[in-house]
Length: 308
Picture 1 (cartoon, rainbow, N blue to C red):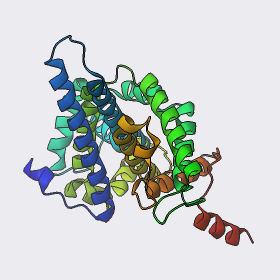
Picture 2: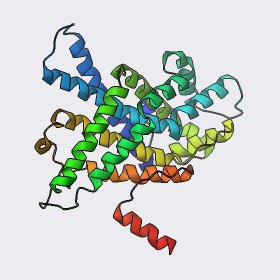
Picture 3: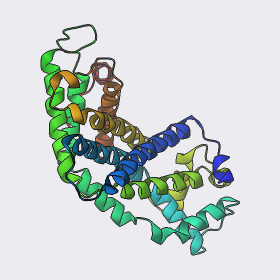
Picture 4: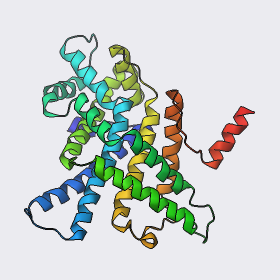
């Protein structure tokens, strides 16, 4: 524990660490509610409590959205490859004091979700339909300033579009997330934290001459002959998506009331929605599968200038 606390993160790593910690808080809040409701036994709960259960489920799924993109960024897979190579004596490098953490990760491998189990879970939750509905919500949020009726509020039509997109995504999440518990998300979040402690260890960074976590991931990928796209894009999309879904969790109890769901133009969910669209577009372009993501005006203008 002292070694983990002593790890010095650079600015990019601190941002990643902060996102995982926030994810952990979301899971913790959902788990606390789930335990409290379990203790009530099998009784008929009032509607307000049912709303709370939906919120808990949404917080869990927001956390898992970040975990899904961090999976694609290579956080857990890289450490799984490294621990397997170290165990099989396929490493001709001195791991220093990070060796203890890597050994502990290997010994506890059967106590956590496997890669196949994680990918199956993410595939169940974050389908093509989900991505399309997420895009609709993010687009409607960033277009709130159209026909603004007041200094800090969008017009009635844009606010109605936000509500409609939120309801559609909420219904999709509730259907697709059936049976997903806070305990599953807690397991994955704990694995992420353990992996970050390993990837950020000074001795392991020194081995690969890495300045940050991603330099370490890149070094491990070279050893395991693994190719993956730019991980920072996935971190950016994951953080933004978690923020949007966290907002949806808070908005869920008021989803039927347009007046209660009104989103001010300075709400922090709006830049997160823009961030999600921009990073989703960049990921799609890198993969050669460009999604139909409408770019915010500033970025669209910049791209038009580049094309001239």
